[in-house]
Amino acid sequence: MSTRPRPSRRHVLGMAAAAPLAASGALALGAGTARAADSAYAMCYFTESTNLGLGTDYGLHLAVSTDGLNWTPLNQNNPLVTPTAGALGLRDPFLLRKQDGTFVVLATDLKGTDWSYNSQYVHVWDSADLRTFTGYRRLKLHDMATHSWAPEAFWDAGRGRYAVIYASVNSSGHNVIMVNHTTDFVTASAPQVFFNPGYDVIDGDMAVGVNGVNYLFFKKNQTVAAARSASLDPGSFTEFGTGVAHGGTEAPTVFRSLTSNTWYLWADTYTPNGVFYAWRSTDLAAGTWTALDQRTYTQPVNSKHCGVATITAAEYTNLLARWGAPAWNRLKSYNYPDRYVRHADYAARIDVYPFDPYTDAQWQLVPGLADASAVSFRSVSHPTRYLRHYDYVLRLDVNDGTAAFAQDATFHRVAGLADPSWASFRSHNQPTRHIRHSGYVLRVDPVTTATDRADATFSVGY
Figure 1 (cartoon, rainbow, N blue to C red):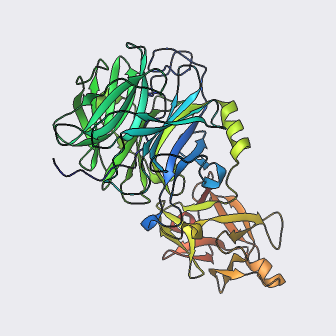
Figure 2 (cartoon, rainbow, N blue to C red):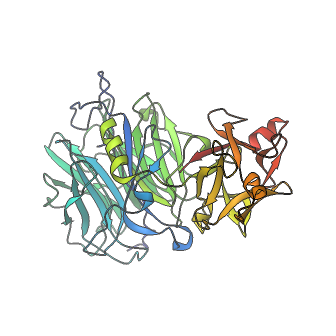
Figure 3 (cartoon, one colour):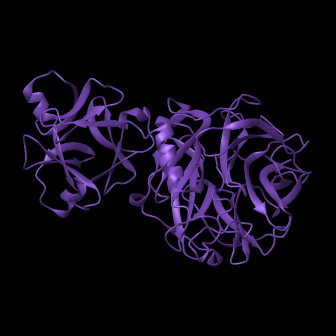
């Protein structure tokens, strides 16, 4: 048996096997049926922070988005539910909208990074609305002395059943994509080999019924590759196209925009607290992808192996009402979008994400200490401390209650100087100066050049 690769932290496709938009604008599912048009997205994931630190949690996390690119974590980025059997933790959760309109959640039965742990089961929950999760159980998929990694499900209309695909090592001695069929996610048929190209593959992710073609995305070596077939029969998929990678890349999640003829491919790196990267395509059949600028998308903090499902406007609103949006924000640099504003040894700077403690980059934007119409930046990890300028350099200091401190720690949010859809922050008591980075250190400086404007522009998100 060949050496098994490190498993992906991949959450599978969440779009009920993302399929084309019907002429009415409704989403055509893998079954070819149409349902009411969705207008938002839900993402499931687990979390790992650098070196498996503070932000690591092997429970089910959810975030929501209106554009599929920028995400609002729910429940303060804490888990909504955690397994109570098996390994007592999950990886690679997957969210499927079933034929009856309700949801099912599947996940790898594994807590942490003990890749030698072999489970023949996957975790399962039912949910009517993603506000409650019921019927927790484990679904047995095989009797082999191996794992069941990164489960995904899709509706197989020809068989009138759901297909559950996952990675296991079979008699070939390497990881292949297996498939079982089920009607209820309580019991499943005997496993079959779904895709075995002759080399190690994990992280199967499906887009079903796209102009009569079914697409399978998967991790091959350190690359996300693709195969396709006119049927959903085991063994019928053939690799095609050009793979994508950004370092060691895994965990593909492919879904279609609800507002344009655009497909998104999300994938992440396999180190703890891996970074998501995203690509776009307007034609899956072409087999090529274009990398997105990191300015255009932001992953939930510490998220790993995401899966995406479409939801209605009412579901989006109800999820925010039930679980709440974060009570903090992160600030992304405009011209260095892989960097976020954080404090380190009480100095304010922009650093490459990820880092620990990740809470050093979380801020509460509170009413300005000197002017309630402005803002002050209170640290989440040091809540008695605020960003303030001192000799034009920003640092994190304890509020001493003086008028001078209040003015130094107050800033007026204005339209982004480099992009009005972003934000810039003008000093309250030095009104000719804005917060900007210089040598990655934050200062308040006059802004005169295009470079200055880019240095002084940030996104306020999560």
